[in-house]
Image (cartoon, rainbow, N blue to C red; front, top):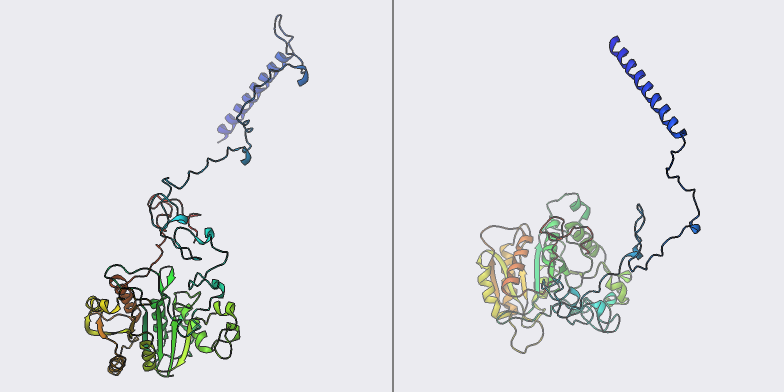
Length: 432
């Protein structure tokens, strides 16, 4: 250990002596006079005394000094975009074709005037004209009162029926709630507390019946019939605003509508008339109508919505397949050539978590016979399903085999995610 330390000290002393000798030699060389004929450096002169060649004018901007970023104004202006007519811009985010952009897509409808080929921002009509909700040209969407009058129950799409197909028709779901009550607590559904009354079934049925991707079904209505209290709540997809599809949000809106009727704060006067269009349009109680009555009154009201009366679909485990039932419904729902208005609708009666009783089925058959409405017992298969799942399947078959309302194409989020399908990064690429 001692010998190692001695060697380190000796090596350090030798390095110090070598550095001292090298420094002394450099100092002596600096003090030597210049040799004969050697060039002597000229003293520093001001810039004005020196002659510099004139620089030729250049069209390119001077380069930025190192370490300093170039200013944005030094960049050349971007090239002008080619005109859309006859170009290959795109693809269009509406129809997916190349040759035009989404704002000029011929299949895109303007929400102000209802025309095609432009958006509301570029609409040539008067500013603020037209309602984007009901399509009326007499008011704006912020003052829309659709649903206040007795006949304003459904909104039908303007899509023309194809050859051999049906036009847009109403769909009314009637669900008898055997044990549910109107004085339930929405917070219990959020906390996962489901009692034997199963109000969560009614909330899920409302969500399944009214919602689809990116929109609500304006041609659909749901009636929840509370047997213990002889009350029925009607929820209209053509009138409600700002409703979320989760069960808790639906439960909050249902509870608010059943706890107290619409009043002056909702733009409704003492007699039920609309006194403030703006307040009524933004009210959370709009589209929810609580009335006294049982399942019988709900079915009677649904059958009286159109003339001729709508067809009645009664879900039954031993009924005919839904495909065969839709084939029978097609000639009943199809409008005649030149006939205006909406087509004949459909009333669907299905049970809650406890199903329909024999008395309920007999009641529906009797009411359909009295109204002269066709009655079809329909089966979705041999497997027992949830009520909400049955509603989704019914919508699927009615859309596929009879009529599907026009719907905007879904946004391709996968293609816009980073590293998926070669698309750009997700950040900043999706503006919903």
